[in-house]
Length: 306
Image 1: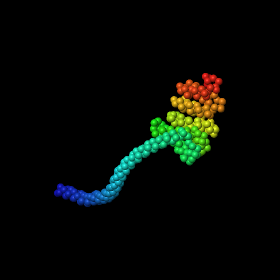
Image 2 (image 1 turned 90 degrees about the vertical axis):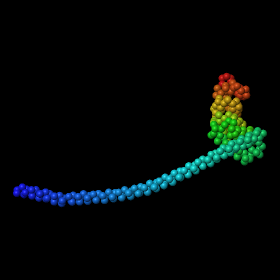
Image 3 (image 1 turned 120 degrees about the horizontal axis):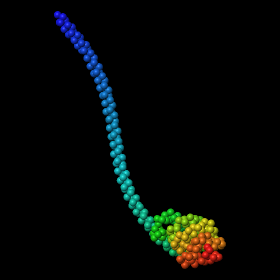
Image 4 (image 1 turned 180 degrees about the horizontal axis):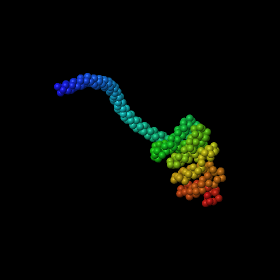
C-alpha cells in the first residue's frame, strides 16, 4: 500500500513538472520566435537598403561607363584630328621651307646684282630717296637676325650669299661722299652703324661678312663725324683680337686700315695694338700685310722694340 502511495506521489511530481514545462516552453519559444521575427525584420530592412544602394551604384556605374565611352570616343576623335593637323603642319612646313629657299635664292640673286651695280657708284638722286632708307632698315634687321643664327647658316648657302651681298652693297654705298653723308646724317644710317658695331664681336667665325663690314667701317672712318663716332665706340682691343685669330689677310688689312684712320694722328706708334700683334703684322706671311704694317709702324724709333 505504501508502495502504491509513493508511486502515486512520484507520478504526481512528474505530472507537475510536465505541466510546468508545458507552461514554460511556449514562453521560451515565443520569445525566441519574436526575437527571430524582429531580427528578420531588421535584416529585411537592411537588405532593402543594400538593394537600393546597389541600384544607385549600378546607376552611377552606368553613368560613368557612358562618360568613359564618350571620353574614349572624344579621345579617338582628338587623335584623328591631331593626326590630320600634324599632316597639315608637315605639309605647311615643307611648303614654308620651299618658299624660304626660294626667297633666299631670290634675295641672294637680287642683292648680288645690286652689289655688282653698287660697285659702279650710286647717283646722288638715288642715295637721297626713301627706298635707300627702307633698304638700310632691311639690312639692319637682316644683320640682327644673322647674328642670332650665325652658326646655323651654311658658308655656301643662299642665306650667307644674301647677307654678304647686303654688306657689300652697304660698303659700296659708304665708299662715296654722298653715301657717307647719308649714313651719318640719316636715322636709318646711324642705326645701321650702331647695329654693326654691336654685332661685330660675334662675327669672328664668318670672315666673309666680317671683312665686308670692316670695309664699311673704314669708309665711315674717313668722314669726320664717322671718325669721332668710331673712336668712341670701336675698341681697338677687338680689332687686335680679330688680327690674332683670323687666317684671312684681308681682315687684317681691314683692321689695320681702320686703326690707321682712327689713330694716325694720336701719336701712338702701335695704333692701339699690342706689341705682339704689331710684330705679327710686320712678320706676316702675306706681303700686302707686311708692306702695310711697315708703312704704318715705320714712324716708330725701332720696330724691334715694339
